[in-house]
Image (cartoon, rainbow, N blue to C red; front, side, top):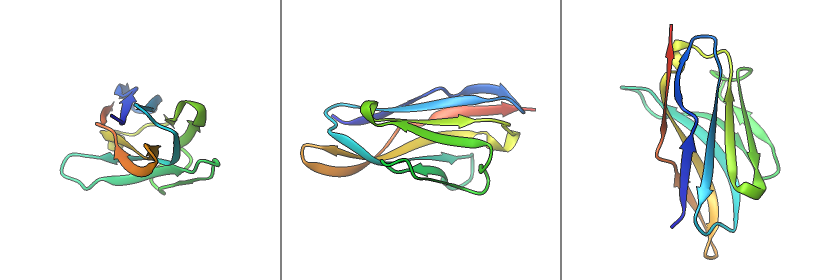
Length: 119
C-alpha cells in the first residue's frame, strides 16, 4: 500500500526554524510533482509550495522567501525548510504527491504533521 508519511513537525518559537520531511512508502516506481499544503483551525487548506521532478518550484506569496521546498527523487521524499516562522504559520502541514505504482499515476495525501509557533 502506497503512503506518504510526514515527519518533523513540533513546537517552535517565533523566528525559529523547522524542517519537514515527507517520504513515500510502499511499491512506488517514481514520483512526479510533490507539494506542501497546510490547514489552520477554521480555515481552508492552503497551498504552500510545489516542486516538479525536474526541480522547478513555485511558492505561495505567504511563504516566499521564508520556506524552501526540495526533494530527493531516489528516495521519493520531499522536504520543506521553514525559516523565520511566525505565529500565523501554526497549522497542520500536509504533503501531496503524484506517485507511480503498479503502472498507474495517482495523487496521494499524507496524514499531516502539526506545527505550532509560539510567540
